[in-house]
Each structure stands twice: as C-alpha cells, then as structure tokens.
Image 1: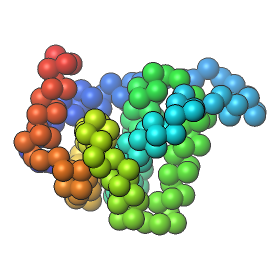
Image 2: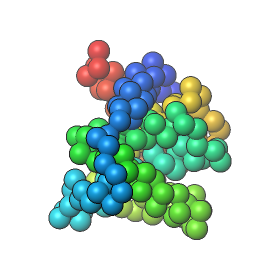
Image 3: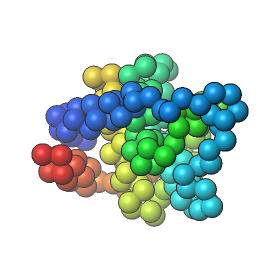
Image 4: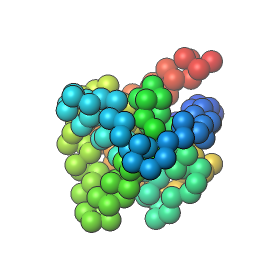
Amino acid sequence: MILGLDPKTLVRLRDHLFDTGGRKSIFLAGAEAYEHQHPLEGDDEAIAYFEAVVEAMYLMVAADGKIEDSERQVVKGAVRELTANQMRGAQIEELVAQLDKRLTEEGQPKRLAAVCDVLKGRVEASEAAFVLSAAVAFADNEIADAENEIMNDLADRLDISAERAEALLDELETQEG
C-alpha cells in the first residue's frame, strides 16, 4: 500500500468520484458541446495548477499501461468536483486527449517532472494532486506497482512526507465521516 495509507478512505473518495464521474452532462450536440469556456478562464495561474493536478491523476491511471473505464470515470468525477460541475463531459474528454498526447509524445518521467515543477511550492495544489492521485490509483480496486512508484515519486518531488500523506487522508476521512 502507498506510504501506509488507509484503503477505506481511498475507497470512499474513489466511490464518490466514480459516482460524480458517471453523471451525464447536459447533452449538447456538435460544436456547441465545445463552446463553453474553461471554468477558470481568465486566470492562467489557476488553469496551470488545475491542469497539473488533473495530469497527476492521469499519469497515475496510465501508469500500468492501460486505462480502465473505472479509472477514467474517477478522473472525470475529480475534474467535475474540482470545477464545481462547471466542466462538461466533452471538455473533460478533450483535456484527457491532450494529456494522453503529451504522455505519448514525452513519456511519463518527463510529464511527471513537468507536473511537479508547476505544483512544487504550492502546498494546497500539491496536496490535492497527491490525495486525488491516491484515489484514482485505487479506482480499479488495486494499486499496481507502477502506480505505487509514481505515488512515491510524486510525494518525494512535492516534499510530502509519509506522515503528512497519512494526515491528509486522516483529514479526508474525518470530513467524510
């Protein structure tokens, strides 16, 4: 298990994000589906942090070389939560396609370094990326060795100690309980 984290907390967070990710967006056809602007439009710094957090989650689910539907749905739910349901399904799919392209072109080590460069020094964003990545890692009911390695690398690069990681999930469990 990652850094001794409690799987019960991860299961609850994962289940909540899975349910949120499974909700259908209001159906919009054609170009209208892509016309809605980004919920953080106009705040380039917030967009950069948001995209880094989402990419950390994406790198986690892609770590084992395959992305299960359950993992995709949990990522989608996390994006919806992070944007207070302002991001449409088509926008999320477009973002995921961009992340997939970056991963394919540059590789996981380079993308993880880029994500951590954006997040490092921003405690709230770093911790959000860590907790959400832990939740999506557990989306398919197991944490693969490759996911565990990325989780540990993410924590190390973002200066999140094992004690802090456990405290973050304890806080989460307290809030959910």
